[in-house]
Image (cartoon, rainbow, N blue to C red; front, side, top):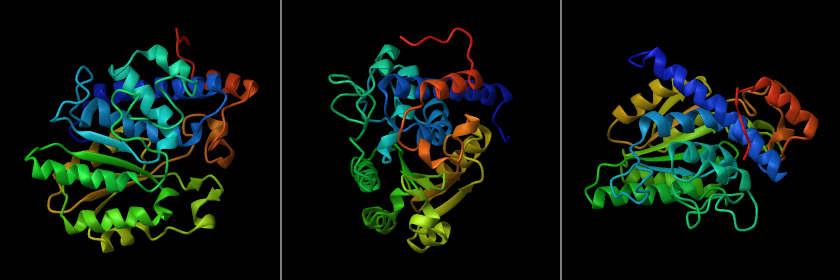
Length: 283
């Protein structure tokens, strides 16, 4: 547990339970979306915004803020749930997900959504932009940190490795990538579609410090590993986080069919029973 209090861990766990319910409710109401990967990523995103990152919802463009890029932009329901709860925009907006004219589109749009640093969804591009932001901090003599979440299917893209090579060359130690290693992509298991392992050795060969996160859905472990990543100096860092797609809803866990579809009414009824939160309301 390290230096993190039991109360902090409990509070974060309660938040992630709320966010899981909101992810499922907003995609169910929209009738589409990507709930599986949102559930695998939510614990890490929650710790980033509630403990790790320096942000100001009242001033989204604050020059000294830390930056978070969700390169796997299709899991934006997770990011939207956190941004709303932190205060970047009213929570009522969550129930307009994917509607025409909504500030919350099916992939993040930096022009529409306060708190979104980059429009993502075309996979493989987020890390390169994160490199540019990290380099800009050095040029501007700022001390902010840039965090970038990647999907494991996404790192089959060549642009990711071009960014990895650049970051190591520039020794961007204010850049922390986080790989959501849930082992599933739209067509099946990553190791069947295009094998990624040994992932840690590949990132080390590209000149990165690599940190292993045994359980990326355990907020206490997430807290500890993120603290370690900030302490590492001289190289860009990547956290390879083992997660479970669909985490938190028993029948969704490790099931590829929940990559890109909302739950049916019967499935939603079952999920609500598992994630029951007293007084929960959908606007």
